Length: 308
Image (cartoon, rainbow, N blue to C red; front, top):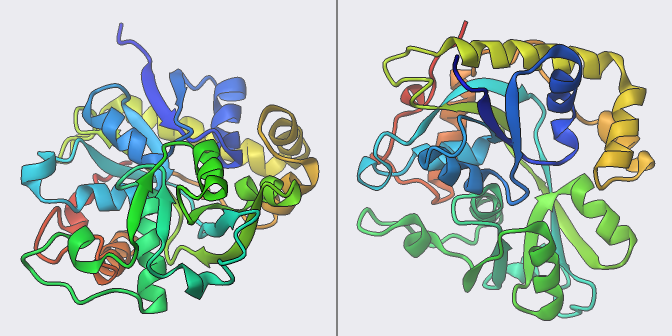
């Protein structure tokens, strides 16, 4: 008998339907928390430490957009959609950083990120593209060399380390999901500078290339996981009070913030499948932002393996 799959996830409010799928509907998997986010899950997938990952669209796409010489077959493929709404990234600095007055004052500063290739890293470039901070790119340089609008990318791994760094001066700012950051605005630990929304639906599901093969073959256990997630989402949609209770007692959110978040998020009725136009748009924006270079890495259509 095959051992249960290992599923990587981010232990934030978005994970509530995953919890419901396991608690109420028999999701047969070992859930492994990755508080440092999607970039860490990419590393774990490629190392064979997890089988499925539920994380940020931009992180997954950026990981597969690198040249094959760097990543082989990429280690994973997109198999499903987990959240349909965009993600609001809050832009934060230290509580006592008077020199940082606005988002525009962050050009050329030190950006704190969880990992190279993570959502916090990718969105730094998306912010720079939106603000007109990028330098011209050339085919001979890497994205980081050709388009860096910051003096340094400070790799800090965890949300707590990011908060500490903007207060100590190790980093000047970082970006993280709005409601996860809000508690620390309310306590005065960090200060909000602004926000930016992803120009794409925010969360996708991937499976290792052992389970979702580049030739299109998908392991039946992946299909079962997606079906159980569908039931967890259905339960979430019909039991908001249970969701608020879970988020406000088991995760790091107030009841008020949990209720406000519920107004902003939309999960799909079926997790199976990925809209190819979303991936094409994401690749296009990441190329424009200098995260990916034209002609390198997997084509958008090759990043996705179709499920039932």
